[in-house]
Length: 560
Image (tube, rainbow, N blue to C red; front, side, top):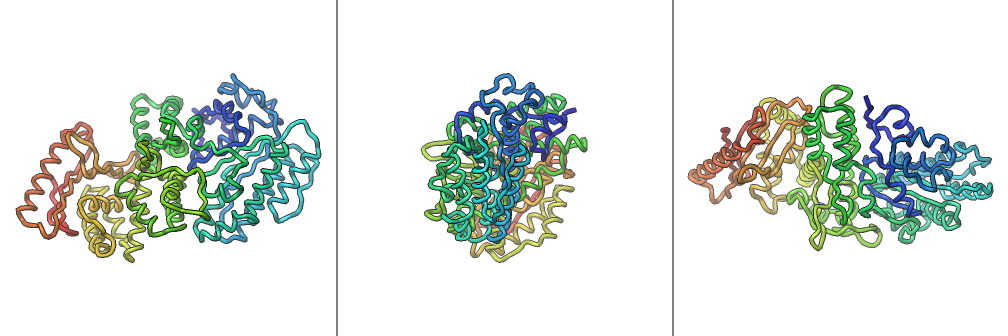
């Protein structure tokens, strides 16, 4: 049985130890058309594995293993002239993380030293690494010493997670971030050496991966050491999985046809939806989350209890770092709009320089960079949406925490946990409803610019974002209408019940017994109609509720 490569980004191990590998070698020929290549994608999309594959393909020292490592793959049948013709110099900055600038530089220098020494050891070069606390000096000396050897082959430099260290600085002050990147900063100096050695022909090729474009323009003049191919349609699926690749994976691991179909649908709702080019129509699945799900299933014989890999949960923190960077209040409003409206109109920015400007389009671009937003369609300007259910949950959870922080009010965590457990085990919505009333009452005065049925649903969503046992759908299409909230058991979870909820909202000044009864009757009729939908009728242990709000209070909660 093929092993699932969750957490494994070493190409050689995948190809020699019985792991599943989705063939991305067809992109090698395309990538070769650009000598200095920059490609950005959200975290955990397979960037490191792609670099590892290129490392093995181009390494002059691995020529005798070409058949072993690439047999059966596209590039084995169609190799390029540059195969196994470079000395590979690789830097990985994924571990550089510290909010103190002096420690940040030390971590950056340590990574450069590691990469430089590995390069020397890999090829047994007669080069002694210079003693210095400057990344630029270490790299400059290494490449000058390499050039002095006068070898027939040149250097191919791979830089993985070029911007990982910025996550640390972004959690602090924007000025500190700029100090690192401005002229004279240690990061900018490092990339200026790369530019110089590339122009001299010592570094013949360069491939850089990362997540955000926020660092680029600050590091060199327009970052002209590499061509930004991030939104080029030809490279939309360099990393991540396409729909056909996902279906092929499910076949290869031996699932029954029925299991393939049901699992694919879970993946489509929760891990798909990313569109990485305005000129492309290829939607991309998060490959790491698919590998996480399948590895859990392979190890335990059942789907994972949680659809969310714990390593993805940092996304909420990253949203906060972006929001706090500049124009905080305006950014708060933007996040609220995205969650409430489930979309936002904007323009992708190829470079973001917070030293010059930082407006709404820059925030949207950064949220797009980290995978919180993706392109839905283009009608003049781009319409951005949250790509899938997992990202929706992360956003609702972040908005819940932000709203409580701004209101100086904290929901009782124990009460919320108990209420969610009751909902999962019995389908009873009343405990969550009581928390929603309490929440709305506390935040109403200063936080609710507009209050209606839409906001009521939003509050329920924010509470339900705290559980990974349930899947929640807003405005789910059924029959001739839309269910306000559909709650289903997550695959592999311990939840026993699902629910459909129809909300009715009446202004306090318009509330009468007759109005309440009228809204209740209408809600019951809607639920009865929704229940005729085959997809709804097949949900086991389904509870059905109509909840009528008058202002911030529930005046009627009826189970059908």
